[in-house]
Image (cartoon, rainbow, N blue to C red; front, side, top):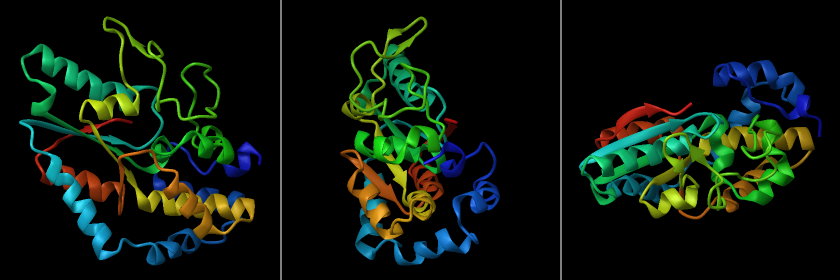
Length: 232
């Protein structure tokens, strides 16, 4: 699998990226990946679960971080900085709510290491391993070692997804993006799109909530009182 063939991502707009990359991915039209969305729409129960997930937001200080792409450590460092500086100014974690929406090119961070290795997410999504500066072959923000991440002036910080979850940070992932990208990669690898999507969903990290789309989730979080912060 060559990097130039499977790299369906760029820093440009989502639809523009898919359009310009369609030929390289072997996708004849944008209808191909989007057609699958009709068959993978959330069931009424899944929609209820997604909506109910936001009812956990009850703290006084609420924020949603909109993570659209790999952006060094920022989608994970900023939630921790929000909690640390609130604690320093007298607000405990239980009085804060942080939601991180993993969408567009940031969706692989919601998935387990084996999928990063199998589907070369580091190359496809241009996600570097902070330790090696090379395309990641694992999810670098899941179960990191103590001291893996340091912020000048703060020292070592606990910004692994599991560590942030332990502090009450809520993570969700865009199902629409998983549908599109799994279909595109399946086409390149001559695999069944539905099976690849099923594998990705089964490989989501614990306590990460799928959402109909990332923009849907960003909107719902704001409707529940979260202020918006773009995380890259």
